[in-house]
Image 1: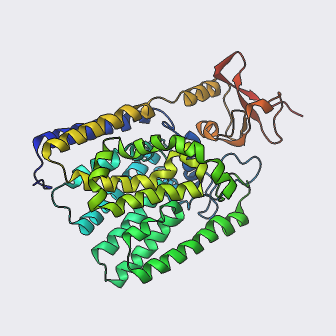
Image 2 (image 1 turned 180 degrees about the horizontal axis):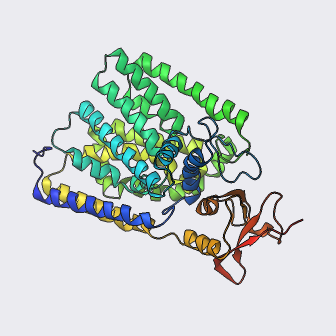
Image 3 (image 1 turned 180 degrees about the vertical axis):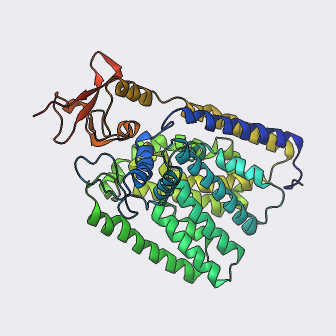
Amino acid sequence: MITEKKLPLPIKVILTLGFAIGLGLFIYAFQTVLNGPHQHRQADSAFVGYFFCTENTDFLHPHIAPRGLTEGTAINEFPVYGAILGGLCKLKGSWDEATPRIISLLLALVSALFFWGILIRKYNLKNVSGFEYIFLFIFLPVNWTFFTIPMPDSTGLFFYSLAGLLWADKPKNIYYKLLGAISFCLGFLIRPYYILILFFLYPGLLMTSIIFVVCIGLFWFWYRYWSSQVTTFHGYFGIQFQSTQEVLKSLPNAFAHLPVRIAEHTALIGLWAFALCWKKYRWVILFYLANVGMMYVLKSTHVAAHGYYLLNAGLFASFVLILGYQELSTKQRAFFLSFFFIYTTAFTQHNFHKNKNYEMTIKAAEENPLNKDAVVATYLGQDPEWLYYLKRTGFIIDPQYFGGQCPEGATHYLVRKPENANELKLGLCPKN
C-alpha cells in the first residue's frame, strides 16, 4: 500500500524530477511578460490589479486600459484577483510581472490541496499520496497552461475548494455550512461557470437549493445590473448569453476542436483512468461531461477559441485521474506518471518561451520613448496586450483603419512597419 510517508522509489524519482522541471520552467518564464496563450485575457486580468495600484481605483469600479477617453470601468469577473495584485503592488511600492503568476499558481496549489482533502473524505482514498494528486492536478495540461499565467480562475477555485472542504470536514456544523456558503458564492462571482460543482460538493438539499438561488441573484446583480450601471466601455467583455441560432451555428467548429480539449484534460494517458472509473466512479465522469456540455450551451464559440472556459471540466478530469490512478499497480503508476508528464511538457513547453510581441513593443518604445501621460492608439487588432506592455491607456483598433491619423485624445500610435511586419513603429499622432 502506498502512503503519504513512504512512496516507492520510482514514483519518488518521477515526482521529484517533474516538480523540479516544472518549477524551473515557471521561473524561467519570469524573464518575459505575458507568456503563453490568450495574452489579451492575461492583459485584462493583470491590468485590473495594475490600476488598483496605480490609479487607486475602488473595488466596485475595476478599470481596463482600452478605454479611449472614458474612465475605463468595465465589469467582468468579481475583481478579487485584481485586488490582491493591487494590494501587493501598493505594499511593495511597485508593480512587477512575476507576482501575478506566482499568486495564480499559489492559489491553484492551495485549491488542489483542499480538493485532495475533499476527495479523501468522499472516497476514503488511502493508497495514494497528496503529492501524487498535486502532480496530476497541477500538470494536467489545461491547468498547467492557465494556472501559470495571470488569470483569475485559480482565485475562484480557491473559494470553491474552501467551501467544499468546510462542508466535508464538518457536514453538520451550521457555522461551517454558512462559511462554506459565503466562500462558494465568492467563487461563483469570480468564475460562475464552475457552478455545477455545487452539486458534487452537495452540502445538503436545503443549503444547495438556497446557494443556487443566491448565485442566480448574484449573477444578475454583478453581471447584469451593476455592469449596466457603471460600465463606461460597453460591450468590452462578452458576458452575454448566446442565442439558440449562435449555439447551433458553432456546433461543427466546437466538435472539430473537442479532441484537442479532451487531450488537454487527460494528457491522453488519462483516458485509461476514465475507463477504469466508468463502473465505480461514473458520477464523476458524468460531471465532467456535464461541464463540457454546459459550456457549449452557454458559450459555444469558446469551446474552440478559449480553452480556459473548460477549466471547470478539467477540474473533474483531475478527480477522475486520481480515482483511476489508485487502481493501478506501482509499475503501472510509474508508467502513467511518466507518460503524463512527458506529454504535458511536450505540448506546453512553448508557453514558457520569450514573448516576441513584448520584445517588439519595447524596441519600438526605446526608439520613441513615451511620457507617463501618453494615450496610445494601437492599430494591431482588438487586443489590449500591446497597451499592457507599454503600461498605458488608449485605444485598440484594427490595422486596416490606420490612415496616418489618430482618434481624438490619442497622443501616439503603434503600428506594424509596412516594410517589416516583425517590427513596430511608435509614432506621434499628428495634431488636427
